[in-house]
Length: 345
Image (cartoon, rainbow, N blue to C red):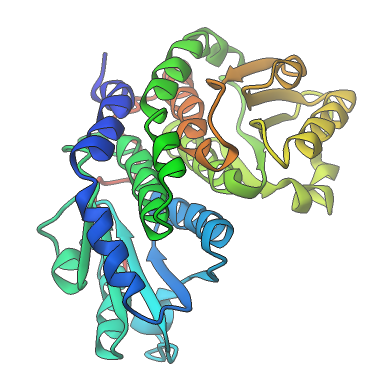
């Protein structure tokens, strides 16, 4: 077993540790946020962390009706025209906490008197030193280039902070079920090692989700791109229906992220349409009928509320990216042109 697969399989333990051993940091951060007149949130992130920020957009909007925007770091570092802020919580999300553009967004917010927060797996980092508040993901050292356990730890941190902000014990109780759901999802997707052989010739496709799992579509597309060099384009199902569905022809691969919840019926109907058009359909779901539409089912453990499903829904995509890389003859531990830490200005 290579290091990437070990880190994928460490996720249940890491999430359990974050929830049960480090909950006090979320309470402290929530108290500080509630003490300020925060009316909106601005998040700076790159890569995988950007997908965790997309999750925050949906989750905190849903839980707290907070407008959550993604920062544009180039306005800070390239164009030197950062936006004027008021009543804003500014968050930097970064595994390493070292990318200068993310740090610059948080530093400018500090200079403007805004409340700032770092969500990072590296407590001693420029980002953590710059922000007023720090949440450590406690995922442990991640050696593989592709982020896996740090991504789900960031999602868990976003969800735990959301629960703490609302003093929502029901949400926190739901999150206690995530480690077991992760274990079950890992076990249910053992077949992907064999299924990946089918997709070894694939060079392009689409990943479709919506709502809370819009971020999952982006994250799965990133994983199969950086590990197996497949140009998978992520879409909201609504956007996909507005044009890109024209790409679909017999054999065209589409990964459909469709857990149970309020958007499930729409995604199931899209799956039926894609199947009718001959798409090679890979389905990430806990619903048996929707999995039944798939050429390749990618099952999820059932029982989580829809807002918590992103914490497990990326895992089949991580496994697919790993196995597909090997099926194509690539080393998933050394993706070409990539380093573990990327510093952008």
